[in-house]
Length: 163
Image 1 (tube, rainbow, N blue to C red):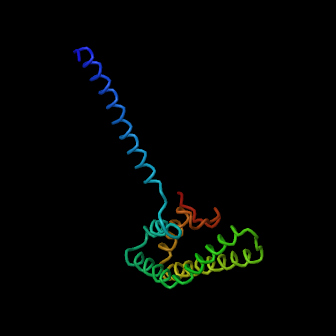
Image 2 (cartoon, rainbow, N blue to C red):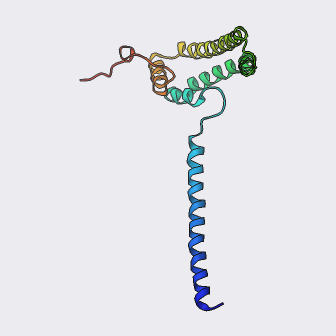
Image 3 (cartoon, rainbow, N blue to C red):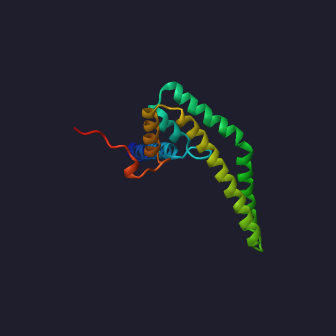
């Protein structure tokens, strides 16, 4: 090989290496972004309640967390019933002959279980909130409003005192 050919091969190799390295770095950046945007696994978004409770005193925050955790533990059978009903609805939906009555009944069971779950969790939060001082209860309501868990009308929101 002549030195000219060797030089051309070296330059082409360097250019290809730069593109390969750039592609790998770009893919890593994109992978990181997608991973950061991935939602949390599980039911709902537990971070919402945690963020809403930030303004509470540590002992009240702990009480809220324990009440929700206890409610979630007691609801495991109900959660499994809801999942089972949704799985059954999916199975019924792909059958060659659609049984509308059975599908409606199965979806009704899933909906009833979901409502029972939500009701129990909301009750646990309200039980703790009922024992909070007024200022912490307002702070919790504002946190729930910010997190999207609770949407209050403008009239229900406390107005800041302006001189």
